[in-house]
Image (cartoon, rainbow, N blue to C red; front, side, top):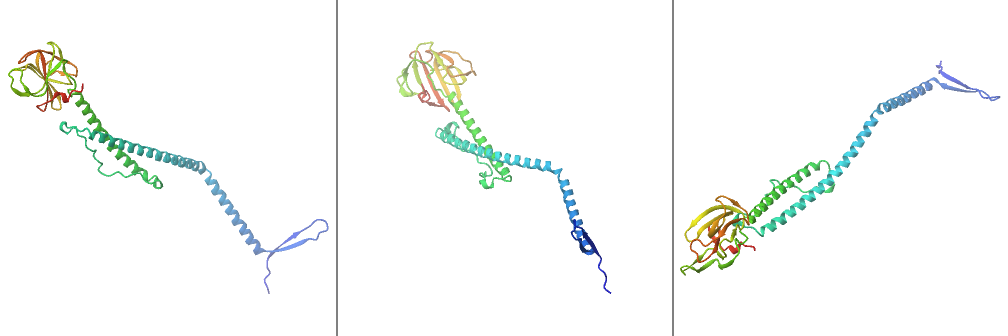
Length: 301
C-alpha cells in the first residue's frame, strides 16, 4: 500500500462570489524553503555583525589614509629639496674648479703657495637616480651620496680659504712701498763704488734725502736686528716672513726695539749719514732666503 505524502493545504478565499482556491504544498518543499530562508537570514545577520565590527575602524582608516597622503607629500618635498641640494653642490664644485684654475695661474711654489686639486673621496659618489627610481628605498643612498660630496666640497673650500689667508698674509708681508721719499742715486747691480771707485755689486737701492727724513716699514714684519755695521753705520733689519728680510743702512736714529712687530707704514727710523757714506741717504736692501733681490721687483707704487 503506497505511503501517503504529507502535505500542507493553503486556502485562498477571495472577495464576494469568487471561488475558494486551494494549494497543496508538500511538507518536504516547505522544510527546504524554511532551511533556505534560515540560511539567508544567518548570512544577513553575519554580514550585519561584521559591518558593526568594522565601524570602530573607520576613523583609524581615515587617519591612516591622511598619514599616507602626508607622507607622499613629504616624499615629494624631500625629492625636490634633494634635487635643489644636488644642483647647489654641483654649482659649488664648478665654482671650486674655477677658483683652483685661477689660483693655478698665480702659484708660487718657491714660497709654498702652490694649490693642488682637492683629494677625492675614498669611494666614488653615485649620481642621482633616474626619475623612475626616485622612491623611498633610493633616498638613503642618495642622501649618503650628497653628504659625501658636501664633505668633499667642505674640505676643498677649507683648503681654498687657507690658501687665500696665506696669500693675504704674503701680500701683507711683501715690501711693496718705498721706505722713504727722495732721489734714487744708485740702483741695484754692479757699479763703481763712490768711495774707492772699485767695481762691485751694489745689493740695494740708495735714496738720497735730508737727514732726519722718516723711514717707514714697507710691509708687516718683526725687527730682528738693530745695531752698528762697518760700512753701513746704524743698521736695522726686519723679517717679513716667507724668507723675506729688508735692511736699512746709514740711519741717524732707529725708532723701534728688537723683537717689535711693525705694520706697513710704521715709522721705524730716520735717514742719516752714518758709516761709509758720501752724503745723507738711505741704503735699502731686500733679501729672499739670504740672497739679495732688486727691491724694485716688490715695490708697487
